[in-house]
Length: 195
Image (cartoon, rainbow, N blue to C red):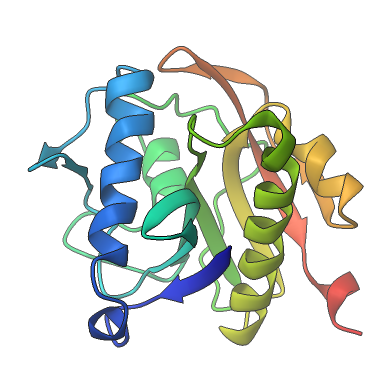
């Protein structure tokens, strides 16, 4: 099993990995969850998949097992910034505006985590290992990008998993039904992991 952080600068070094990650997102969010999201050629994408973002993929033998997208909270592309902030601003019909208990930050040291998934093809006995690998690489990559915290919209049960792995993860909003999945915004403090 490998874990790779992708950027527009290094996509060419990883063959089909980025496309396979978008295909795995399509399988998870469109085929399994029935979310109405943009897609083409079996790949899911949205307005936040820009050169400003990074993508973390847990993969093995070309198959993407899990993934997450990191986007700086300072990102801007047309009217869009980052998913959580744009939802709070009422720009996204599919995500309620009351997802956060505070105003969505715009700061160089805060990044957003979104499009978190673990493939349904991952066997139960391997899921925890895959999830831990994904979380560890997310923390490592975010810190290398200068983040001291990550704001995420994640499945409701994920904060317990994060705490089990030693991540300081606190709810930052109510649990909401988003597209048939129970999700919550969380603040992940990375400063406790700086030592």
